[in-house]
Length: 275
Image (cartoon, rainbow, N blue to C red; front, side, top):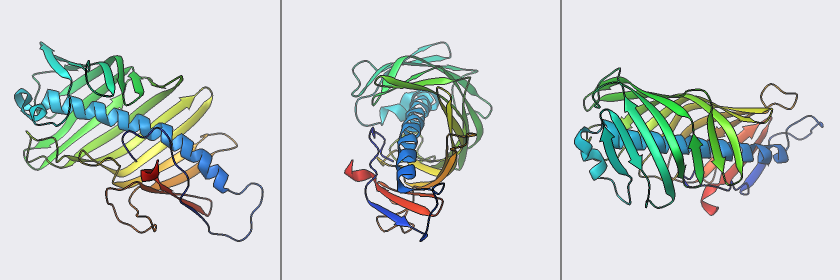
């Protein structure tokens, strides 16, 4: 999934895995509709990942050394006690502010929590409003770091004139780059957990299993997202979305834009790089 994706392309191939169908069976059109839902939810997911990345880089990194090594335009960081303000004025494709209040002296200390709030924050066209709680669950220097990242109540996600409510309860396992704490370019995180999107009365859910996010890649590299569209309704549809495949549907885990969606005997392979 491309980080800046706003339109979800559904065009590469559709492979039916059965020879007969009834009216209540899954169709390619059903998967295309689910692709729109997946698009909105993964955009929200990538927006939250970017918030996590910024708070980690500018807040936990000792004396800002990690943030100093980042490429491209970056927010202005300022401190008032244990509260970090990230001001995105002048940052390309971003605006507004993120506030991160630490429960103690910022650093990689297990148990340290951070309350994250927003002030007109927008990144790559997606706005976030609400409160999140970030906690360092485990840390061993150069070996292991695990964060939890949860919404406190509902997060309002806005894209253009559209908005929806979104919640998440996830863990971020820092799989690569932990040895180089002052360099953010080599970081890779493995995400597990859940999220829920509410649009009026409709509820869509995602379950993330070993979803791989790397700062050096414009796509989600690997992992599986189970999407439940219209959860709890008569039209509920459960779709397995595999991000670790290549153009031919083979397991790859490379930095590319291919996603394989499967439900009810139908498989739809999506080429994200063309959109």
